[in-house]
Amino acid sequence: MAKEFTYTADGETVQEWAETEDEAIERACEALDDHGIDLDEEAIREHIEVVPSPNRIKSGAEGVFDERRRRAGERAAQELIEDGMDVGLGTGSTTAWTVAEIGRLLREGDLEDVRGVATSLQSHELAKEADIPLVTLDAVTELDITVDGADQYSENEPTVIKGGGGAHAREKVIDAMADELVITTDEEKATDPLDYPVPVEVMPDAREVVAEWVREAGGEPDLRMAERKDGPVFTANGNLVLDCDFGGLDDAAGTAQELDGIPGVLDHGIFLDMVDAVYLGTDEDVDVLEF
Image 1 (cartoon, rainbow, N blue to C red):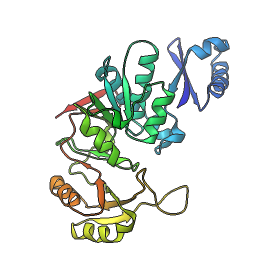
Image 2 (cartoon, helix red, strand yellow; image 1 turned 90 degrees about the horizontal axis):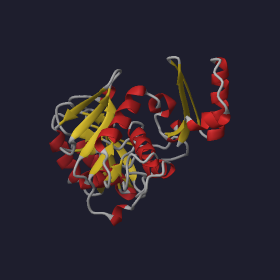
Image 3 (tube, rainbow, N blue to C red; image 1 turned 60 degrees about the vertical axis):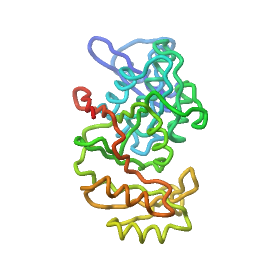
Image 4 (cartoon, rainbow, N blue to C red; image 1 turned 180 degrees about the vertical axis):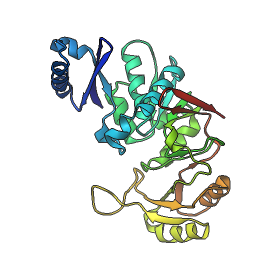
């Protein structure tokens, strides 16, 4: 998590973020001086909150600090999370704001006895830094709610494509455990029919034959390569990911069924008929789609 300073005076807002609190204070002092505002260090610290770090999320600062995503993620936490809940904590730039806001509500005493189950290492680390109590996946058999992100969603059916971060196998288990699955996102990720390449997690030794079977099913598989090291991406389960382009998924259920039937596939990124609601950040507000 990063740190963000926010201060409003005379209708003018000063906002600065940094990876550490000391850096945030330094930047806040410079910004306040530029605006002719005098605050001592103690007062500055009182206006610093924990926020998602753009350096730990693939969309970077532009995606993380997109106000639409921030608005949707925070609103979901404020409206959906209640005392005593066990909550699935999703992955992505929008859901990171949900995690940060749950942490803030717990620290300020507006929420109590909330426990989280992380869908990925990313959300696990975010939740730890936000001071959300965590339990392991094998410690629970059901969840009250999961708030998760999506690479693409449909406005016409309760189905999303996930797996851009390579955690979709674990995500699908946690999403399925929840009494309610809510997706937080922005309007740019809406597509009908869904056409985002479907991530397919495969056993390393089976990648060639699985790729051939995917082609027979109408997809074009592409082995996902790492960006900061040589070679392919490996999932937390030690498997590879094929990003499979099927064009438009006119029959998402049929494609999901075909992928489910391919030996060597651990799981795929079509989350079929699982979504209960979508919190959609817009330029002005948050729209809620219910299924």
